[in-house]
Image (tube, rainbow, N blue to C red; front, side):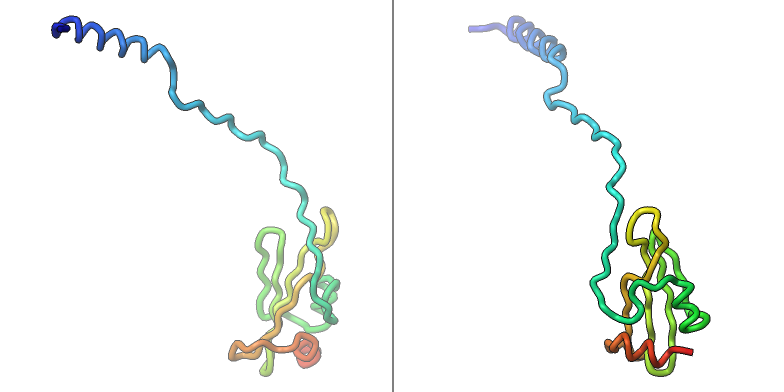
Length: 124
């Protein structure tokens, strides 16, 4: 039988050797800092406003009801009694001027509206 002193000595030896072993779980290597690839925005809509600059849209409709910039994007909103038009602008490639890449149209009560009809109704 092993006495308590020997058992204690064996336990202490195990703890001492265990402390020298280092961490049990390897540390993760931090990821390398790399710049994300430039975002390319490709329009998927086909209406009369896609591809126009914000200045060109402003000449068509006048002063917007709302003009919001967030990150790389910009939203300009025009509203009339029959519809609300939201035009979203993004640069089609790095270094290019932003153009209209997406347009939403809706009625004042929130139902979808046809973009070209809404744009025609809101023109000056």
